[in-house]
Image 1 (cartoon, rainbow, N blue to C red):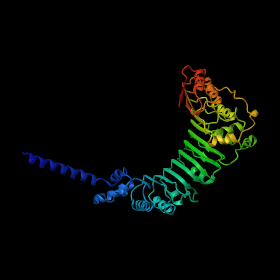
Image 2 (cartoon, rainbow, N blue to C red; image 1 turned 180 degrees about the horizontal axis):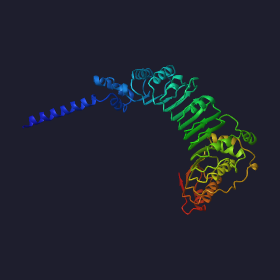
Image 3 (cartoon, rainbow, N blue to C red; image 1 turned 60 degrees about the vertical axis):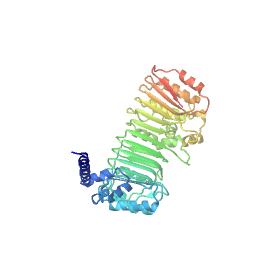
Image 4 (tube, helix red, strand yellow; image 1 turned 180 degrees about the vertical axis):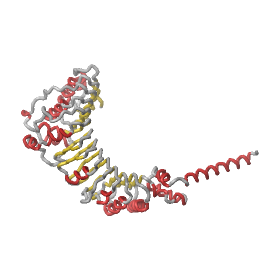
Length: 429
């Protein structure tokens, strides 16, 4: 066979292979095509409708719809979202929409069209302008498993029947009421993850969730009560912006809020709390007699002000009642943070504060860390106590944030006696 014939033969084979490959792609089931297109952004996926007649409607079966306004002009983005939600005819596993422009006029229409697609996962991040009022149609999606809402107003419809399949609920920068949030959570029987942060209108959180395993709460609330027997981890950072912090021990004792809270957390494995809750403990006069022993608690994270001995006392009492504690992380807020500001504003007569002489036995503590370390004496003293309390300690990691000469402080830290022969003090800058 001469060279010209050989070239013609190879060309024919390539064209044949290309045709077969093209035919194979075009003959794929609609759901497979939709899954392929989900790897593209929505705009690119819609453009594939011009490839051929077999791909014209392929994007309408995409299981994931992720819409971001990015560099879109507002009217073009509105047109895109309207088209996608009106023409999509497949199952929506995931719907996400985010934008830096305001869409209050279109939001209700979009949510109505979305609710008719019965999505499994919904994530809404439209952060420009006032909060978006979530329409009642969104609360009627029976198959929803994950819900993430940001910059919103939540008011449950009277006929709300709950999300029977919802496992993850994440609400950020929102406003609602005590009763609506209580009902929203309690009407989700299989909920196992809950995050509530930066909210307004909520004072008393009542969390009733039999399957809940992890909770994260950051916000301006007065108290929180749990009925969550399977809770494993809790992050609780209350703050009281623009309000006087309740420091009356008698009032706190009457409310017995702290006792109820700690009692409902007795079986958790991981706990993160701020100095506010520690101040509740110290002012509630239950420092040495906590209402629960945290036998399963292995990890503690504290945001604490070392200059407030009340908080240190409360922390030590918590350590004493966590006999199986293995990991301790401490963060010292900066002087400009809300924790420090509140502490400075609420200083009591220091003569009424007992000296920090409590002896704590941390037999199982392996690692500890202190972030925001400035090298002041109270911080060095606390590290010294940890080294003296923990016979199994292997390392204390210190993140240096001091502004002064650190050589003398480092010398003190390295010279501290320790009961564990393996204990190391590691300082990072």
